[in-house]
Length: 312
Image 1 (cartoon, rainbow, N blue to C red):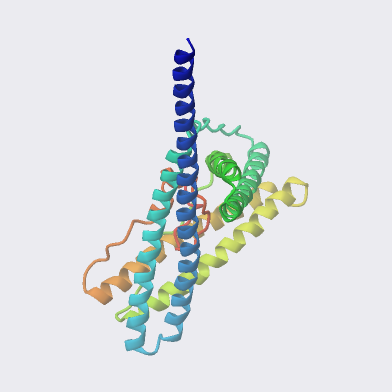
Image 2: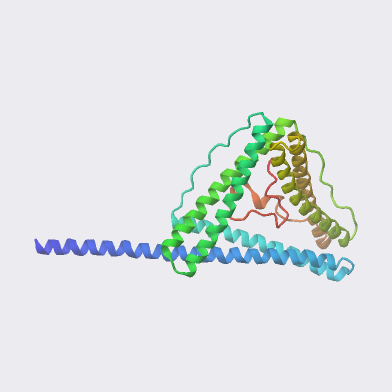
């Protein structure tokens, strides 16, 4: 009997040892996955700064054709590098999910509009604000992941990474909902967006670069104007202003920004064609923000593709 108990005892001890070793290995693997993700995250932030510098340099070199061609080539090379890093980040996220065993919940079906502008505008602002809150939570999760890696805090890293994916998913849910709210407001007032993207006019590279830089400046101004228009809706809901007028202005600005986004794409194609003597080969407009990527950890328009363009 003692011999059998001894054998069983050793078996259980070995089984526990295997489980413990597996758990330790999983924690180490997660730390490695998160470290890789954070490294690519930081690389992308740096790359976007480099691209912004490229744009400034293009403006400086507009009257120097030789230097301008060099700068534009560097601009496209740096954009390509940014796209590569984004692809690597996507791989990092997938590896983190697998290691963590994270299974995202199915998105809830968005609530349809009521047909009442007052109610739909109120819902839009509530859901948009909630989306912004989720963005802050995701940023906080990334900071917590970074701290856990630095402190070799395995338990804290598991918690922070799980929270990161959970909040990213919740943010996607809010995005889907406020996009439906925008479409509802369009129906409420019978909004029909106007304006068509126009290809840049020119014969030499400097013409196309000038058009690109001008459109980029206008596009950034529209992004700022959207915040102003959104606040005007808030004010109208409080009784200060005509709600339909403020919503119309907001939707018009959104449409204008979307058109400028398309023109930026056309500007870049013209720049590439002038450089290479053939049609550009770049990802289609908005490809960086396809439906499957909307719950990513980044929510900005730094590469000109508007993350706020759905439903235009």
